[in-house]
Picture 1 (tube, rainbow, N blue to C red):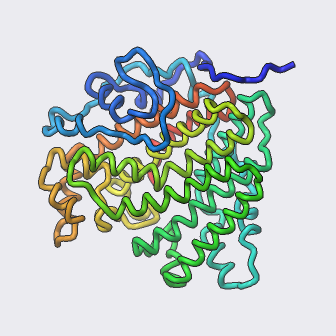
Picture 2 (picture 1 turned 90 degrees about the vertical axis):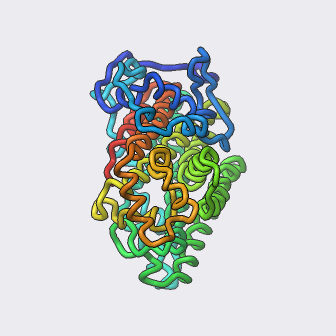
Picture 3 (picture 1 turned 60 degrees about the vertical axis):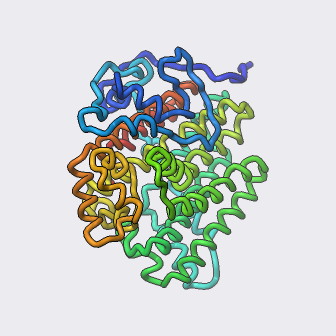
Length: 418
């Protein structure tokens, strides 16, 4: 008889790696201190000889003390390559491609979503189906599917998805898409995923209603799962999305509070959906809170890293790669990671941040300051530290192709160009 997996143990495969995954773990010296500060509340406590595995969901990165001592370029972070601490955990030769591994479960994703959005009014149907054309990356459902299978195997089940887990993957994409529709109205965007936004084609009023309808359909699908805990966890996502949007409307005068504000906003707007969806699929198969927290913390750290890289791409990728105009954040008055780091070398940015780059020439000057600073590099290093923590968390699960694919996914997050 199989013994149930009541506790989480650190599993290893004894393999080695020589890719970007080594860079993820290549911090030392001042960089190691920075990683510890940036991951406060997510796990590792540098120099303590101990690991605090879990934190409250609302814990956010606080690196203010470090930033206040980083006024000069010579004192900023410069990571030195060292042997990767995760070498003995995984191997690129053995890690599965996440998209390939999840493809079978995602083949009918968009058809299933369209069934949930089935309405008789043709215009509303066209609005709701607009982004569910099968051309999206389905990044969030992919993570949910892989996490579900990894948790199933960890819990001594076969890897097949439960119906509720499959529904959560679908719901995650519906909530994400509804938030994009609303974001485009708020931001006045005219491009999304390389095509004209819904608000540009049908107008803002109909776009808002379409986003609301998608959310309502997702809520009905969520209720049909029939698990009150899962309903509570995923309802938190919608609250976080709204709170994150309100946070984005404001800024902080104090530099340390400003960065904490930015990262908390990033969690609520981006990472909460991934983290809570991962937790939801684990709840359906395992009652152990440690397993559920592993799933949550993996999603949280990958989600924040994803947003940090997205903020970097706003400065480094051209519009054709992103599917939307570059420098979008600056034009919207938003100070993201690269700008906040650049402000340490160019204090002139402080006044621009507080007036949300509203004066003529602010956007161009801020752009130039970022490019002349180490802001992009420092944001990338911070994303690496979050991915390192994601790897540490998911490595606590029993080995499986899906678990290893989630490890591989952290590398893909860091190296993506769109």
